[in-house]
Image 1: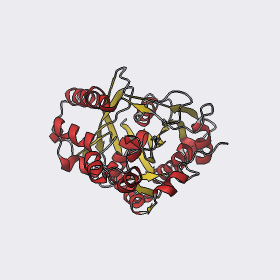
Image 2: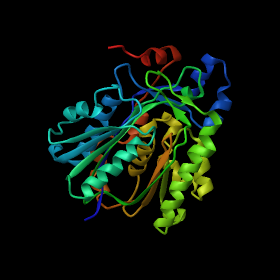
Image 3: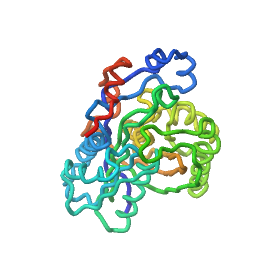
Image 4: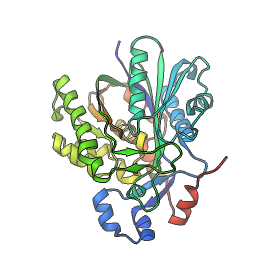
Length: 345
């Protein structure tokens, strides 16, 4: 029995703020920042939107596309580094809102920006072993960036949900993970904003892990970059995935359809999964897709996927990534600051 993705759904808040507007407030050169980051604007959550609400909306779309009874979903894993509660799972709220359970395995995952792909791997294992019929994996974040910090230009909000089962629309043919203790980005308990190791986050962190995971996957599947129609790499900005793709031998034509960071910023745990969703919105049966996520701390999950002919049956049942991209309202910095105010409840 082939196991893989039977459905997917996305959600992106409608508010956006441009790199130019952020730079205007801090008196920096927006042209050099845009060119360096290769990001035009980022998504901003409304004042009442958090990882839970993003996950619910993405999950609704995934269920809509799947056309299955929510009660047949036996596991729900939510990957995020911005869960709204320190003690209380996001998954219980999301599960109830989606009509899953109570016969439901729930866990909140945290591995920086790759928690969503880790959730996908766990769902695959449970379905493949016959423990559950369907599993839902979600990657969602309302990312934090200290005002004036480089992260503020890219830290965005959004999420993607994937339902894993048998007889899929996208088969998961192979996966591989590469993990080390590399502290390039962190946030201690009680701290409002994360800290990062500046240039240290590049070569020894992102590039080393994404390269190692991708190369090993290619070796174990006896494939080359040219064998894939599309490739999606984690997108902390537009520059990193573009650079790694070229280094590994992938072309701009292979990565451009999934380069969502340019228009919505870095959605952290939602990043690579949103990129994959954008690709699935246009992919054709038989297309092979490579996806490699990255999470600070540090690790990468790499996947070899193949689109089946069933994709045509489900694709138009729910809003696509492009629909959310077009439905936007740009805000100034004052409005952005108000929307990002944390509610103390």
